[in-house]
Every structure is written in C-alpha cells, then in structure tokens.
Image (cartoon, rainbow, N blue to C red; front, top):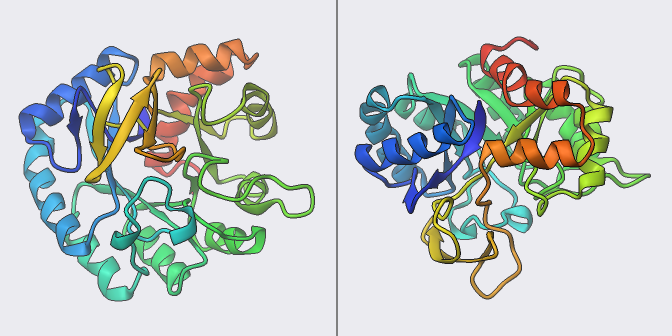
Length: 290
C-alpha cells in the first residue's frame, strides 16, 4: 500500500486520462504496491474540483487505486517544495466544504499545514467527514503540530521533508508525531530524501507507526530527462528529480520494492519493513488508530 504517489511512465495523476492513470498504477503494482493512493499537487480550488469530478468517473475502472490524496493547496509557502506557490490558499470553511463535496466517495486523504489560519477547524471538518488529515509542507512548531494531531490529524506527510528538522530544543512536527501514538509517519526511503541513519532511527522511535511511501512523480520508470510536475519543469539526473534550475526535490522516482531494499540496507528489521508497506498504511485508511 502506497499512501502517496503522483504517477509514473510520464503520466501524472493531476491530468492523465483513465488509460494513462491505469498504466501508471499498474506500473507501481508491478513494483510492490498492491494499492496506490493517487496524490494531486496544489492547484486552484476550481481546478481541483474539476479533477476530482474526473477521478470520480475514472477510479472505478482502475485496479489498485484506493482513493485520492490532496497534497495541497493548504500548504505553507516557505515549505511548499515543488508545489506552485501561486496555487496555495488558506483552508477556509468554503474551500474545505467545496473539496469534500467534489471528492465525495474518493477523497481519502489531505495534507494541511496546521499553522495556517483556519487549519484546526479544517482538520476537524475533514476528520469528521472520514478523510485522513496529514500534517505536512509546514512551518509548524511542535505545539502547532501537536494541536493538529489532537484535533484529529493522524498522519505526517513525508517525515523530515518540507518541515523543520528534529532539533534538540525544537522537536517540530516530527517530534509532535512521535509523541502521539495514533500518528503514522510517512517516509520516503530512496536514499535521497532521508539519510539511512535517520531511516533506521525513525523505525526505532516509532515502532509500528512508519509507512513507506514513494511520492513518485511522472518520471518514475523513464530514467533521466525533463518532465513536469503540476505544470513546473523538473529535471531528473541519476534518478533524482529537482525543479529545473534549483536543488529543490520534486517528489521521487521511487518504487515501493526499492524502498524496501533501502530500508533493509539501512538495518531496519525485515518485519518492521513489511509492516511499513502493508498493515501500517492499511490501518491509516481503516482508521485503526482512532
């Protein structure tokens, strides 16, 4: 189960038709992901509404697609990474209810920066509607992230990335997630996003609460070259995608089977790795942790 995936084989879940969405999901299924959460990058609300309507028609015909994850547009500008900052917006009541209505039946997950105005109310609204809320792409302090988790958020979007680090006096969102037993921490184990020592440390610090994700973008499976993510140009060199002209990572070209190999090489016990691609992410969607 991959809770965070943007596409493959040149196909992005932001705009691909049913044939291309099916091909991208099938590629990931061939590389270890029985279930794939289709992640969309930040875009204007009206564009997301249109895409959610399209995906409501598409998803029933895509084997292995488990739903949609909105990775934005409720993100912090200074931590938006490869997302287009012009597409970001606060999580107003109107925006939240508009997206819930558009995503009825398929919207399973949303990432929110909890320090934004209205964020905690949005966390509660999405949670009450049965949507998993993840904290991510955020400048949140430990206390702000903790408030989101105590309001119903139960996932941390790609731990360590697009947020403050685990500082010894300011533990930030990672520290807050570690302090709440109901929270699962996503991890991109590609050997680029997180150092092997911290991969091993996170598994030790949060046993049974790490979910491996790919955060794979459309370039996955195609090697190096120039691609796009949310309309922004991405250069892939030696499998490492960055926004063109910058050193900002733009997702990954990871597959779940390779993430398993990276974790095993980092010294994570096999049983913990198996749980991180199966029972842990499945439990997030099932609401096992309350």
